[in-house]
Image (tube, rainbow, N blue to C red; front, side, top):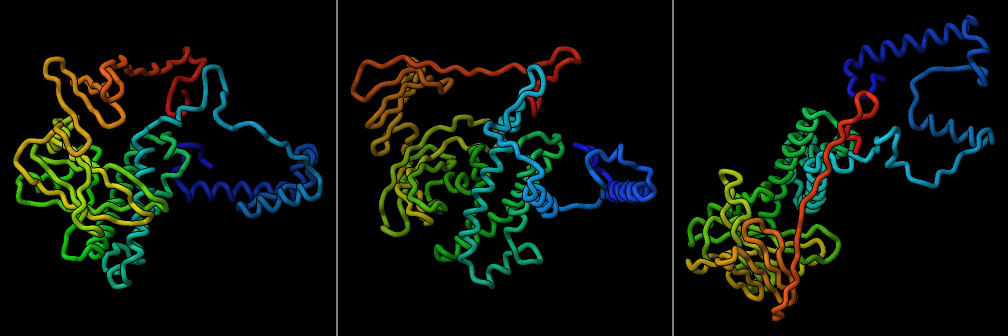
Length: 378
């Protein structure tokens, strides 16, 4: 009904369809459509159908033994419909949109759990919509992203930009609501902020607090999975000082392993943090939260210095950076961050290691004979 990228006017489309339906019925009644056009059918009826009606018709057709169904045992995709035309481009097209869908879907799952703990009055006060569903926008945007031209990355650019904007706005709404509930769960009176730009090494709350040594940073970690999880979180920091991360709930005072590293791209954005504090969360029980207090315990610099059993050090003479733990020893190129050597701790003999990045050149086709590489075709 309008073909891909062509659908514009619903009223015009339906009006023309109904005119077509009516003329077919009239021509059938008058005999203008004869048996030679009907083929194996005795009559034709045109109407608006539904998935239910279609499924029922196929069931009746199968039940009458009028058709023998072909059993397909191979894959539908990827397939090739012409030379060099393999329909597999959409597995990698627009990877940032694919990542956003995964991130927003996971966030929606966690937000549902968190907001489910809110009482009715709090829930109604936080909802931005008249139906009192604070997560409705994010639910709808996640559903829209499942469209076969959305998640695949085959939509036009301005449409993709709109998907991203709408999803990001919905995540912001849901994030504010979830942060409000978490604030009440950890005692109230605390303004929590969901840092949405961690992939850009930006979290203004943590960066502002770490400008001085007198302000602690409280981080709420939530495990939405139904099983235990061990993870490492990253917190953008402004200052190269000595930090300590402690559990502030449950068994109070337990120190968590942490290490401060320089930001990989400190000048990527005007507000990118200069350092990142990596904290080992320890074991998180299923569907649980943990509050971690990060304190600057000393003004001594600590970036790339020992922290518990994990340490990193720079070899200024060779432009190398070494990372070691109890199991592995890795030497990195300090300028590219690529691995140069790898081995075991205490073993002087290291295995040379090289990494290379490659890419496929886009296929330009052969004149008008073959389709060029695109969002669909690889």
